[in-house]
Amino acid sequence: MNSSARARTRRAAGGPAAGPGAGRPDGVHGRFRDRLKGRLGEGLRRRRVREALADLALFLFMAYPLPFLTDVPVWLRVVAAPLLAAAAAMSRRAPLAAATVPAVLGLTATPELFTSTFAPSLVALSFLLGRRTQDVRPSLVAAALLCAAGLVLALTLPGADLWAWFTLVSTVLFAAVLPWLLGRFRRQQYELHSAGWELAARMEREQQLVAERTRLRERSRIAGDMHDSLGHDLSLIAVRAAALQVSPGVDADASASAAELRQAAADATERLRQIIGLLRQDTTELHQEPPTVSETVPDLVARTAASGVDICLRHHTAQEVTEEEAAGEAGAGKAGEGKAGEGAESDPSRLPPLVDRALHRVVQEAITNATKHAPGSAITVELRQGSTAVDVTVRNGAIPEAAPAAGAAAGADAGRPGPGGGSGTGLISLDERVRQAGGTFRAHPTDDGFEVTAHLPLTAEPLPPAAPEGDTGISRSREELAQARRRVRRGMVNALWIPVAATAALAVLMYGFQLYTSHQSVLPQRTFEQLRTGDAETSVTPRLPSYEFDEESRPYGAPPDPPHTDECRFYRTATFDNSPLYRLCFADGRLSHKDRVTNERDDG
Image: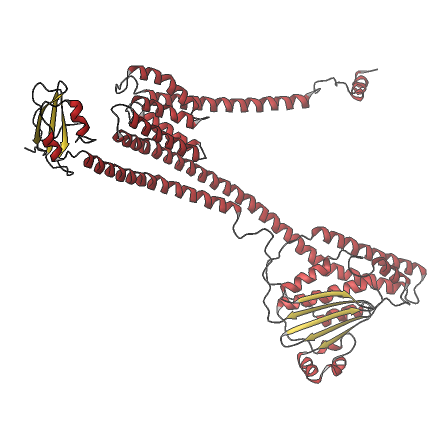
């Protein structure tokens, strides 16, 4: 056994084939998979490197104040370094947890929350929180909890008051909420950008679908033309071949050839209908002006009669229709009655192109169906043209018993038009064409045959195309883009009005608290006169107001404290800011001095 035979034997047995090409497809696919995996892995590595560098830059930005600023204790700065590093690492997966780190550090340093050391970190992480989260509720809840915790500290810590809480709320507003709103605005801008590109991609796909739909419509138009012309001509060929087959004086060979020709024409007609069924598509045709028909209905009837079909035309003109309406139904059957071609001398007045085309198509399709499904039957075409509309009726009788055998066989195979025979697309297209012309169409069997009627108004406009199912007037892509734009506009408005409204509310609250403390820091004159130098501080303090004039600074016009005093307190004589003040000084736990001082700024 030679080498080629052994190779064939191995291939037949399913074993590996020898030679330089063995295993080449698997090797090509393997290299492609390896290259694809390598590119994906390289892309992921590059993305991770970029994210790591960005997180490192964020940490350096947040940690740079630690060695330089001293507004917080050293131990807190040492603890803050690893916490800020963890916050930078968590800023992608858990941005809310990362934003709470500088807030907790600032609240640990001071109940006012604001510190120069941790404020940059709070601003940066709040911006990333708005940029990287979709749901707004957790962020708002966290801000509310932070303000509530600051209020508790302001009321419980020694030396803290509500002014510290006002500072905390201002810090939350401008160092946390405002950056968060800007981050959300940036996120919505990105979503708008993505929605725009997605809309562009969808529009490109829709253009491709429109082009494909246009091609399908052209195929449907071609199918209609084939059905109009070839189907009618093939039916007439089959009728002529059947007449030739039974014609006297034709020998057996010619009769057999005529029978084959008739059968071939019938088969070609059936195949044509099948092809038309494949080409036709459910579509709404554009309202384009149909081409004019050079052949009139009388010409069509005459050409059909010349093929040997028993057909007659009854043409009623507008004047005859008027006379018939005046005379009644009794004289309707006598008007214009005759064989094919008798009405051709009085051609109908010029019809609108749309109506002319629809009329010709109705008559042509009805004759084609009659010759196909009821060969040998008598066909009557009745055309009634009025001043405002034209009516056409095409009816055929039953197949005569003495019909030729060949014709009878063809009719038996086909049956009547409708579901039992043929594809039915011809009648469907007729109904659509008549509807587009503003008329009505009806096709139905009668007691002895089949009847097709159409009513076409002469002045009616074509009906508008039917709206496709599920069409709401606005595409989903455009609606999504409009929603994205509304979100961006709403985000911009929120970034402006929320801080302004919160600042205004905070200002009103602070002003109200200022009025309250001013009123509560007034020492009545009677109480001041009842105080005696040397009274114990423990007996004096309960009779004093809840608040002092200003616990943080001395009044502008107050003289220096008397010597050997431990502290001096200032109380208002009235609610107004520029009113004189009472000064009470204590030494060794007793009231050592009391006097009245002015509260005026010395501008000199």
